[in-house]
Image 1 (tube, rainbow, N blue to C red):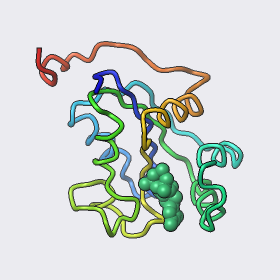
Image 2: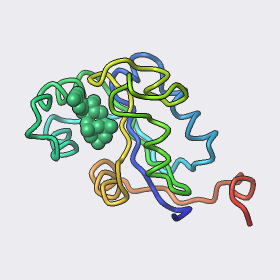
Image 3: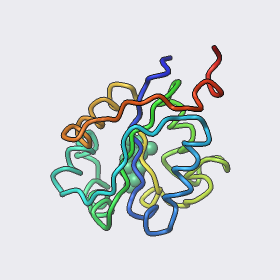
Image 4: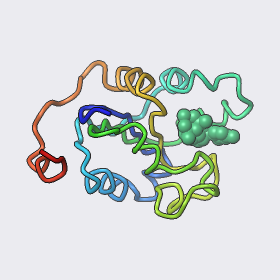
Length: 153
Ligand code: UDP
Ligand code: MG
């Protein structure tokens, strides 16, 4: 568990349209994570197919790509202790009906095909996703002023 672990979190088109951008960012900020990359993007079909390439044989794949192309998405990289696993826990289960209240999907969504937010599922996946979405512009490096009040000395 590293305090510099990074995860790729993406607010999906439904999350943007429903005005949840601030809410979702606030949850990661308040938890103590550091925002190291952020942009609003309208990705191409090819880019989304690459992002979800592991799911390309699934029956829901065409609908998933269509959903992800239905509006802009907010792309973020959050850094901190156990960021990948904790990010997934904050998101909740893939199917919102199975997500506990208190999680993002458990508070804001009902169906799997409109589940508001993406989060990397493993450290290696996070590295690939960060490269795919932020490879060109890169990640910011800075010391978060509050870090000494989040992490034990
Ligand atoms: N998805 C879907 N139907 C399914 C499973 C997944 O529409 O039966 C969509 C859903 O938006 C999900 C995304 O495909 O978030 C990626 O699926 P994955 O299994 O990677 O779930 P996640 O990692 O997002 O929880
Ligand atoms: Mg996934």
